[in-house]
Image (cartoon, rainbow, N blue to C red; front, side, top):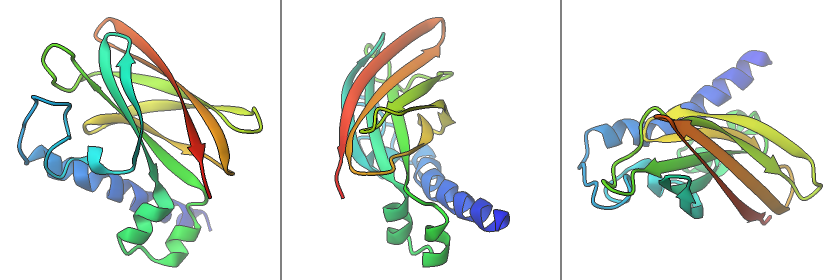
Length: 164
């Protein structure tokens, strides 16, 4: 049973990494936020935040992993192992150059409609920092992101209304 869960999460990881790997060889237009042209992973998921994260420009996208797996043809059995997880992708860019910020990590605290909170590490995943988050039921979720790198630190807070 554990192996099935591991295989399902590996499939999700492959789905999220594929656009990142493809982005490595695509156009490097940094006039706008990284990923806004071509097949970059900023096209994935739903944009739930755009604004300042300390010294950086930021954009947060939320990917419904089950929906993404269905679109990619993953088996229903593997999808069932994922549960109600979502993947939060946070893209940070230098406001002067428009280039992605490297060497940044952080954390996200998610507070659900029941006021329960959970914390997850945001780790580098290609052109974004991200984490899997559990949004268990419909309602308002609040996100507080903290990012740090290159001697700088920033935070952002935003809400998301999960429908279903």
